[in-house]
Image (cartoon, rainbow, N blue to C red; front, side, top):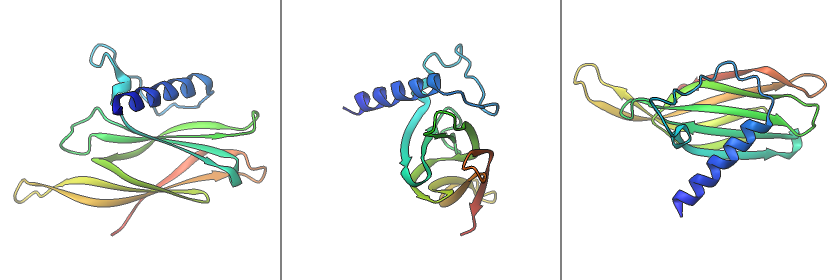
Length: 155
């Protein structure tokens, strides 16, 4: 059952990427020699239709890095419902161990995550809860802007 759900999410991801006209300059291609099945790198995918803002927010937790030390990164796609609206995909620059919860507020995405942090004195790895806030922006005509703001919330 879980494999079927993962397969459907991967198919949805591919379809969305094929249909979008994204400005994803930050996202790197995956070397097919080192990873024959790049879609297996998607750990979690979340899709949020935001009716009051006429947006669809797609959030992907992708793996592929060091599994012991924050090997997952967050990729974000925001698409406007209006066919003439903007559509952007960003590598959010957030590297985590695991995505725990996502909450939406107007113009902001709140990510509750766990991160691994190394204790330099003992060499052990600790797991800490972390919150990231990703802000997205619209101009006066409600078109998405090309930038996002990512901040790690101090605990």
